[in-house]
Length: 181
Image (cartoon, rainbow, N blue to C red; front, side, top):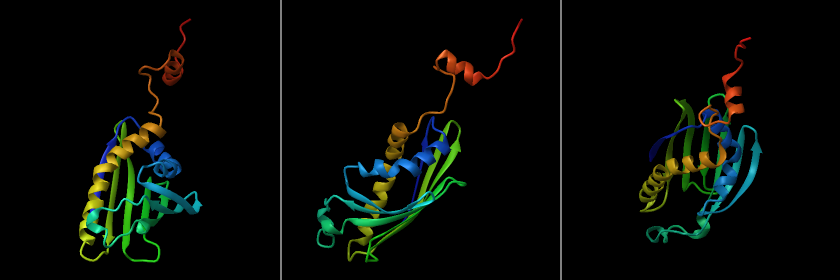
């Protein structure tokens, strides 16, 4: 199932939000209520590989096909600092039941950032696979904007401006001025 989410985050620099997401999102996501654990398998400045485990809250409609112990996946993300993009592949270890490929783009827009997440999600479960795909894609769409807003608010400082800045900061932002006299 294809999905696409677009969201604008105001008063944040695109590069700052991208870097914060690249450098701090793991710790932030680990604190989410649905996450049981996240184990870093490999990491470099341009990529990371994480084994995630969710808490065992399985909806009744899929309990016959999914056990709480099945709620784990491996995320492989490659960061492109030049294009401000993250390309991610999510799979279920030892199984072809889950495959998700996505790209997350951070683009400057006015005084903020236009964030776009576009991907393709495949879940192979007898009878309920398409229902689970739909629910997962809907959850991504419904929660991505709220997540980005909260993440940006807690990790990224707004761009400097002279509005409401202390006098010394306003003077520094204004730059050198001509002297009279």
